[in-house]
Structures are given as structure tokens and as C-alpha cells.
Image (tube, rainbow, N blue to C red):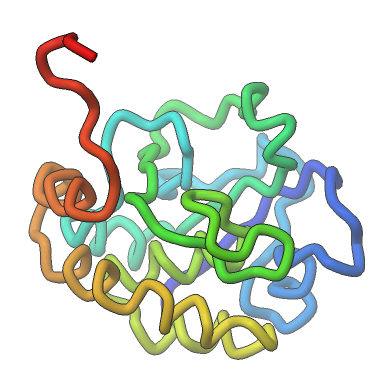
Length: 176
């Protein structure tokens, strides 16, 4: 089982906070500050240049996975994390949480962790994380096909290629 870390900015309602629930169920360890981020960890970062893929599996197993819990309203002030960390974005997925159900890319911390774990091959651990939420299985149902395809892709580039099957491809030639 891979280590999962949470850095919590305390932006959300404590009763609805999925990262706090993961910590409570000992599915993740909360970091007290950014200086405590472990060496070599994979950071889920919506602004990363690469997508999480199977090529990240060894890093996640060796150093762990870090989710930054902050409000989507404050995502533009994404915290700086140690230089030896690998930053990875998640590919296109739909949220199943009650607040953002069906919205693309508006995942909770638990959904993000489960998706990353699933993609790198830690499928049982992904299901375990989601089992603590009454909507958790719905996330897997809603995203079953893309998650299977992403987890079969060998590289970040392949993952990015697959995601365009699920969302509108940006205009290639600049014409509207």
C-alpha cells in the first residue's frame, strides 16, 4: 500500500472535508507544514505539465502521493512544494461528490487520491479510499471507462491523448 499525504489549507467545511476523513480513517497522513513534505513525493497539481500515469508507479510506491487540500476558489495560489517532488495533473474525470456531481475536474481530495492511485495501479487502495464515502462507488461507476484506459496507458503522453476522447480538444489551428 502506498503512502498518502495531505497538506490541508483548512479552506473547506470540516464536516465535508474528504482529506480530514482520510486522515481520520488512517488512509492518509496529514503534514503539519510544507517543510514536512517527504523527499521524492508525487504531488497532485492541477497546473502540472505532465499527467499522472503508470510511469509514476515506482515513485508513488517508494515516496508516496501528496494531495493539497485547498478550495477550488483558491487554487490559483497553489502552494510551492519542494523541488525534488514530481508534480502531476490528473486527466479528465467527472466528480461524483454531492457538491460538484458530474462536473469535470472538480474532484474532492479523496476523489483525486483515488484516481491517482487507480491510474498508477493501486486499484485496491483506490477502492478502499472511496469506500469511506457514501458517494465513493459512484465516482468509480461514473469514471470506470476512462480510469481503466488511463491505467492501461504507459506514459503521461498516452494519458493526455486518451483524455481528448472525453473532452473537447483545444483548437489546434487557432480558428474558431
